Length: 435
Image (cartoon, rainbow, N blue to C red; front, side, top):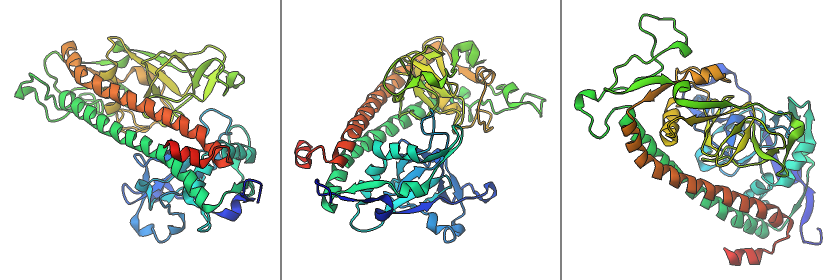
């Protein structure tokens, strides 16, 4: 015991470790048991919106890789943790929606080894800066590919408070997570409403004042082929379905300004806040706005406040909105509508890229070029209809923005409290009285 009454031990003593399983592409199905891959681990949770599946018949065979609500998962392979966009050391706590899922390779599951160790407390330990710093020291390999040494991770020294104190710490921090989850649920409702309005007006053509004869059963889609051209390439396709009078289809280059990111040398990056915020990819994308972790001291390709940030490297098509001027690395582009119709453009792009990594033609891309982006088909209804739609979309987007900023503030407050609670710098009684 140390002077704070905490037991000094190692992570291996208090936790059980299980590496993820390895499966061939041929084993995956369209439904069944969800598989949590490294790409599904983001924002400290497991997002199954774009996961793969194994058949239910394989559950018994792979049961040892199954996940439970509250499990701590750490990514173990990738570029070095100090590199922008690295996933090594990225931590997640498994939500109820991923209970029963299977963990894929390049990640490790960490679970309490005894009733004396609270799983909630262990999850917060895994998301602490101290834990992340230790993982960096465990990374072995080159800058492009490193593997976290599990044996070294198991040797991590840990100060373990009494079980009752663990639960109180987890309870204080989880109160912030509950507020975050509530805000995220409200965002999902708002996004569903905005998406429904867009689809009703601009896909099914049931907009105010539309005539029944113009209400088509399907949206004119860039997935269609050219007339008489069975072998047309995706970027050469064009919309051929009938459109209401006054509606046209143009290329993104005709209606938007596009800026592709370009990465400065890594020697100009820092985490101390010097220079402009720098975003290389989607690592720090949030519910609507990115959070700033890296900064750059030299000027580069920039996105201005209000620009749509669009990922051009896997996962292609993920979007955020710049809430300030930022410098963009090569994994991100910025898009601005020439007519200022950002809310309409946001919904149109979100509908166009129905799944991450998927262009509008249905093909999966690891990355897209500037030419690919500029060649995207953009539906252009009459200006008056866009303005009318944005009268409904803008309040939904604004409220989403307010909630997104609230989430960022809650996370920052929680992350400030986390190391102080774990180290005992803050008295629990005072924190509990304030909540």
